[in-house]
Image (cartoon, rainbow over all chains, first blue to last red):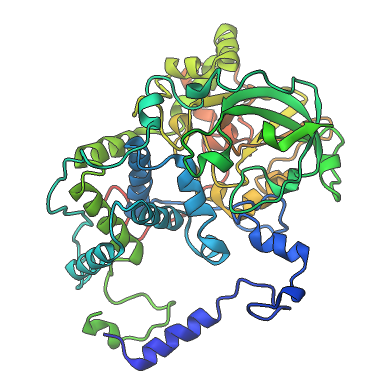
Length: 278
Length: 236
């Protein structure tokens, strides 16, 4: 049991967590929110490329047991057709919002995405999860004291009624994106073509980074066919595959303040819907 | 909460008196138990993937590059059909599911450094990385800091790894943000004439394969060696 003072302390802590423009009040009236800030609030938070930051000390880290187990659980859920990895990326890297995105450890977001997808797809109930968490916590109420962390399932379900995606059937023996080969028709662009990245409005998800949108580049490779991330992340069953391209950008053209040699370049992969002849 | 929570102060800088289970550990165990009970996956499937994940690491990638340095035909194969070449160093990209490790896909490409081109990889959106052949990515590779800055200030970031490149070398950043996974094939350094594949493999570190370091005779460790310890480490 917590006491009233502890509850108030936790509320104070939450109140100090800010993830909004300080010049605007909370829940501003529409006239206070301009287009640039609208775009900033809706920018998928995983898209950090090019944001200013200062050097830090880069470090390795030993794996926590739960981090390793979280990676495994995520991959096994994809293996068994509960989600596509692109659903995982959206749920864990974008849907979490800016505060959790920047505030949580890397695998903490992976773990949250597991809870989220299982609840959203009705595989488990939220209260059942909360009850199980309370039970696990109680098992270790006196601390680990040398005990190992272990899952103790009470039974093993047969899984025959579990709803699974069709990807795990179609992709076996082929791989992904090979499973989509031959399904996008003729590519619109060829190597060497100049292109401009379109500036489509972005809601909820994309893997076309903001820092290349509106920029001119050149097709460096016609890569493969696949549904675009905007469709795959919702597991749209009949999403039409399209061509992906590796596009080359000159760093000096891409960045306003680039002061390196003119030959420096950046390449990234972009689906056809985001490109126009330039 | 139990009574022991109330007789020490809550300052986070003070080491807890008790080795408590963390919130993440509670959630992970609860989710795994419910998944197995409902047949979402079996304990055996979870165990199989765990075993697979425990044996991946950067050695096959280093061996692939060493072999390519020694054998021009293998180098051509590695650049033209990298997943075929991967099999020759023991990595089948379709394993362990029959369609690969789901988060890594099966579209692998090797980026060849030359005397005028230096490649370096990043995933500015998450941490896309060629796990099947290089193992799990290092913590720094996943930081928002590396991802924010490498695509815009690559020479400054490389300098922080101790890698200074002259202006006549094109720095080519590969932002690996969709289904392709990339690794770098650095150039063979001086001072390695007559070396065996084993000897060469030892100097091709993970950092060289990401592109933040160059292989050097006598150097067998990554640039970044500082390692933060785990509270409850995997493998214990």
